[in-house]
Image 1 (tube, rainbow, N blue to C red):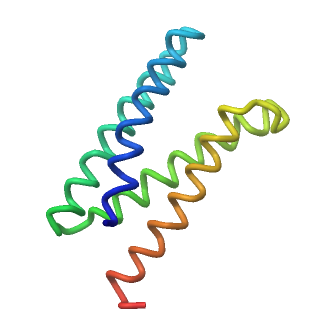
Image 2 (image 1 turned 90 degrees about the vertical axis):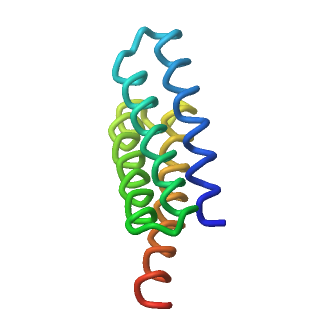
Image 3 (image 1 turned 90 degrees about the horizontal axis):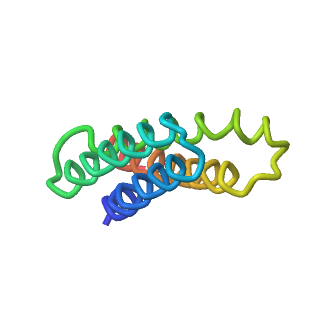
Length: 108
């Protein structure tokens, strides 16, 4: 079940990246959406197959998503919905996957 958020984000991030590119011509949005989407898909695969480092990769992806949203939230004065949604998603996913990493490593 821990792979579900990874697969969901693997589907949503590329769509958002393409939409950002089509709307504003932002190549970084396209590259980040496709790249993070692929990385989330791979982490979901690793988790589903019970292989090593799937949750750690998902956590890294989530921290990267959160970290990339923070400067845009600051730049827009927290008024733009897309950076806020990305930041909230990254924060929630980071919290979820850090919990899963701790559970798998320490049984907590």
